[in-house]
Length: 168
Ligand code: HEC
Ligand code: HEC
Ligand code: HEC
Figure 1: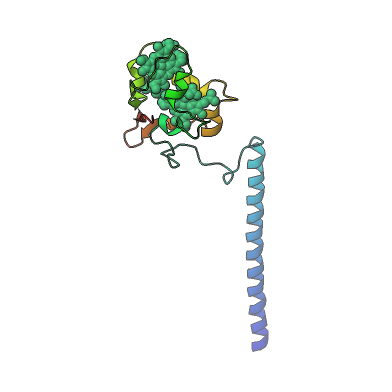
Figure 2: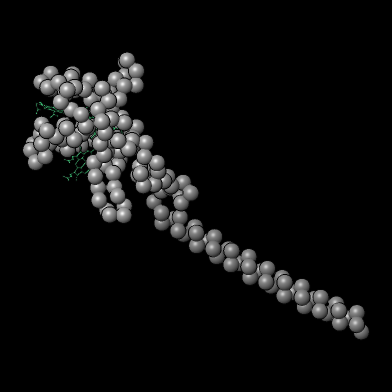
């Protein structure tokens, strides 16, 4: 008698276990089909959550490699690759020599390229870094981020212009 009872309970336990297993797997099945429909409505080529790159926001989401703005990029790499602004501007025929006049960049550029004029530094600089976007090295090498030159205080919401001492 005891033996049959024992067997009876074993069978009950097993069937409860099996039906639980069944419910669990069918739930999973539903999840998978739901995911599929989600994928179907996502445009082709859209990166998945795992593939999405971190937004390129120097100083906010990633370390800022150019905290002093202009001079951190416009520097002398080698004799052949001298990107300092006093050197590149000297190549513009009508440009005054800035070696003695400019101490802080871009602050002192503004003594001539005044805010509010057609010649304002912001127009010159925005133009140079965003013209011919297909070929512009500022875009291809530095992701064209505004935050290479601007900085943002996320507490205050204030945007500033980075600056640094001349490098000549
Ligand atoms: C993150 C790097 C970076 C920063 C910061 C940067 N530049 Fe540039 N700049 C470039 C690159 C790259 C080019 C070349 C763009 C191209 O392919 O035409 C360039 C081009 C220029 C040019 C055109 C002439 C030349 O020297 O090639 C001027 C002028 C210039 N930048 C001034 C500035 C000033 C002023 C600032 C600061 C307000 C500044 N840049 C900040 C990378 C930078
Ligand atoms: C002493 C005055 C003076 C200073 C300082 C000065 N510039 Fe200029 N800049 C000029 C003049 C004058 C021209 C040529 C005429 C024009 O185009 O307005 C010029 C033209 C330019 C041009 C090419 C023409 C254009 O309008 O696109 C660039 C680029 C430029 N300046 C960048 C700079 C940068 C960057 C600085 C600071 C590092 C600077 N300048 C400092 C006077 C100055
Ligand atoms: C290569 C450097 C550089 C880059 C990149 C750059 N800026 Fe600027 N920006 C400047 C400079 C220099 C000024 C002039 C600041 C001044 O007059 O005090 C300026 C001025 C401005 C101003 C006017 C601010 C004012 O107070 O008058 C705005 C708006 C602006 N930038 C927006 C942008 C945006 C948006 C981007 C990105 C799409 C960008 N900038 C990218 C250098 C840059």
